[in-house]
Image (cartoon, rainbow, N blue to C red; front, top):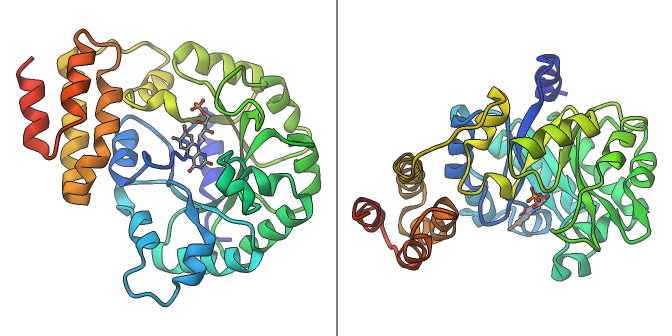
Length: 319
Ligand SMILES: Cc1cc2nc3c(=O)[nH]c(=O)nc-3n(C[C@H](O)[C@H](O)[C@H](O)COP(=O)(O)O)c2cc1C
């Protein structure tokens, strides 16, 4: 294995703060913004191992384009794969390792989208212990990068502990547990006691994830789970400075003007990296930035129509 950055982070003896994968949100621009506020690990959006397998000879591979990163500005960068076929994972892992050179590779065992589960991927893969182990073995055998996994508290009959016991002996560097069951989906209380118990069966880095939206919730998750760190997801949408709040252990109260400046920096980076399509995709981020501000509903109505950086600047400067 090449340098295991997870161990390096663990050795600092401070909570490891990761930007959890969010399809449609955690692109290179947002990852860089989160890093600027102190995120230690940055997950990509999930990418299909099967698409990488079938398009391996395509010159301009759309999946690879989507996963490109700016190495120096996205340290440490982890590419997440989803799928169900070990052969596809093996090839996808080789391609990612060689062409993208990220710092790590992660496997998705938590996605609840019915279309994904139907393919036996995401939470559908977590339900199948034998296949899950085969997929992890295929990834481990085809890269020298540290391999991590992201699971749920449970998927059907398979609970997190049962899942972890089934992969005993495999050199998995890190485990992020979304401490809600598949049945809970994205709402409801995370089971922090379960994350704490996972430590008995897994010796790598453990990250707790689910419902951490502010400093108080972050502290509660760390103290109740004794995890090595946290995976932050929707809690940092429109509030990437939550990373800094947790690191510094103090609230940061930004004025609307300061929030607009962050949103504009995010927008400028998006325009640079993705052009016009990037700005269209950014609309949903912009809506998060203004959530809770006075006049948010009018701002939202304007921001969902922006087409370029100038439109965004005009809206913010008119307030
Ligand atoms: C819009 C959206 C996209 C997501 N995309 C992914 C993904 O690509 N891979 C993954 O493992 N989890 C994905 N998740 C799950 C999150 O990483 C996280 O586990 C979940 O949102 C719970 O954390 P939170 O309550 O802090 O948001 C996604 C969640 C949302 C809401």
